[in-house]
Length: 95
Image (cartoon, rainbow, N blue to C red):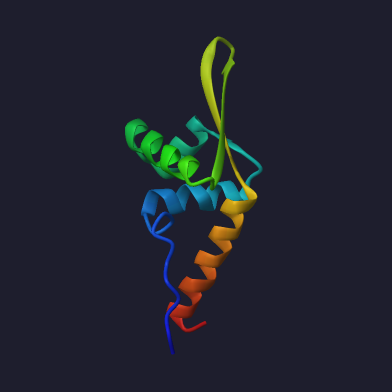
């Protein structure tokens, strides 16, 4: 049995957590992701940028009550990559 290659972008704990959260909700803002992942602001920002660079998430920056607000949502490409990653992991687990 051959094991499927794992997407190296998603094979990172924080990036996988971000994607998992965004799959479950339509969109999430920076503070939501910060609270749910327990990451530092700097690390979360870097990982969001990496996911955006590969086209897995869309990032919208705006202002909410005079404060900057970053909102992330998963793209069709990101959803497809996530689904393939989950299937590949299941293959490793023998499911």
